[in-house]
Image 1 (cartoon, rainbow over the protein chains, first blue to last red):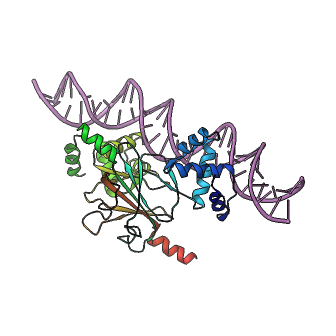
Image 2: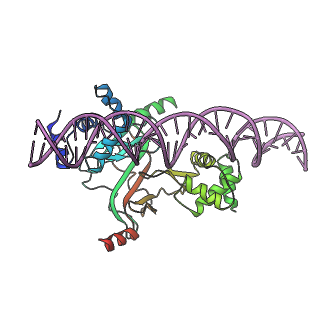
Image 3: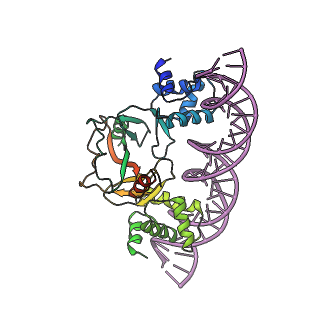
Length: 143
Length: 143
DNA sequence: TCACTCTTTTGAATGATTCACGATAACTGC
DNA sequence: GCAGTTATCGTGAATCATTCAAAAGAGTGA
């Protein structure tokens, strides 16, 4: 659907295939989807493909820097279209929902600090665990 | 070996068993051990037990708040004895070594910030990915 | 269009973890 | 110390996500 995705793949030296475009399309609409969710979304849109192929594509795109992979605790790996800012994630410990947390400051808030001496930080993965707005309300009402 | 561990278990309403004490003992000496490492350490010290039992114990202790579980990307879950401060971790992307990163400030540096509106943060998991001191040197020398 | 190479597909396999259930050992009260 | 109750352990099988290998298929440049 989006010509930009074609360029994106070409830039990274990847061949432009239907499968890859489809995966990118799915992830544009469903951020934080795991492999199975992508697979199901593809199946729903008529492109039945195997789960292994989805893993394959996701792995390729992640390796090429087009996607970012992150693994919430106790949950399969999730993928998202990489945005330049390295934002973080808030995972609801109740419903499992993942929300993006943008850095209000330009740089990642935790990158500058506290790394062990000699440790060359490449990236910082910050995950907040807690209750999302919905579950906070539900919890409060239930209690 | 340590009477404190006995009390620790009692406080949490857990039965004091040899297996649990042994696991706590192993984790006291090997922080950031994964289930398999714990299993092997137990086997070395003469207590041959099954991997499943180790998972069982680790799960129980984690649930009771005695241990903290965290999952570096692409690596099995690791466990550590919970300390009150919520420190963070630095994972070497080359050798896989995990180092603790203490918060220099009393509170977690990232807890206060940026959470989505309505999101009740329970804990923040901060993982630095990069090259440890050894691998930085090795890398520099190799390059 | 042709040939070459990268991708996908298919099937099986691996690794970490969990489940179920009988056997065992730890806590309680006597 | 002893028996009863029940949590816990151990064994086995099973699950889930992911990876690997080889052959068929599709994209790319000439």
